[in-house]
Image (cartoon, rainbow over the protein chains, first blue to last red):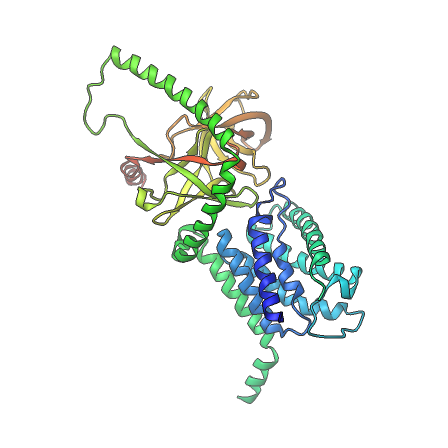
Length: 167
Length: 274
């Protein structure tokens, strides 16, 4: 199986999981996990940053079209795609042996992957919730939503990465 | 020219980033007044189709609850019919012109998509312009007020939910007719806040809150919720916490309310206040 079909499969699986299950989680309005960001996280180290941005925009737009929030997810996901290379360079401790590999818990270690995931997810959720409410009033309420949702999203992404095929 | 090209090449990621974010912002602002997203009709039809399939599955598990609510509503309607018939026999209705007093029309509908976990929640309904739905129609369920239609396509329409930070409803206390403005505070999907109630009004836990009928979207006296007794004294007015009578988490059957002479009423109001 080549990498194109692998990533396409991951994309469709994450979008379907997001729309059918995670978008329907309603836990007191504070927890809205958006696990589709995992697609941005698992793209290979070597991906050109302009291509990453285009993919991020497209991913966000697909979620937007299905949840009636045109532009909001696209904005947040492009932001996540923009910070990903920075976080990767900040954060490379072990040398990357094969740049075509995708970042994972298995190869890069639990601590590394956790830090990487939590940072990108936090940037995405912060942007998303701020753009969604479009106001800085009630900032504490918004921040609480960001923190709780980031925690839950990170948990699920770590879990999915743990059970995904090791290749 | 060469240095410009070099510049563009060097900052191509940043420039692409800015362009994409600008496009996203344009999309957000152009869809801000929600009906404009009807322009994305194709996507709407696809997602409406998918939501409808999902809804068909989940509906099955709610049949018992829905049945109970329908029985309850039937009982209420039956008793109202009984009262009307009894009244009609006493004094027959002789008026037969367009001012006969019928001012609202009703249309049943099903919810095909719904959310309660965002700050701006919308509800998709399986009735559209083909069935006579227009913007500005009210949406209610057997248990109370639900929202207002803000976008219409041929087969679907989208209503702004009461659980939307932009939603305002003119509501009054059924016991003493004091009216105020009802809005959602964005926290729990079971509660909303009724503000602009004068200080001297006595507030009792369990008091019924109904629509005032001032907006010409909903008829007066439609159930909204009950007071929890929690209140906030700020400025000149009281803010009362209202427990909503509709459980937005399991909304399936709703009906659309069209006001037959809303236009006439609004035209007059605009004309006089201008």
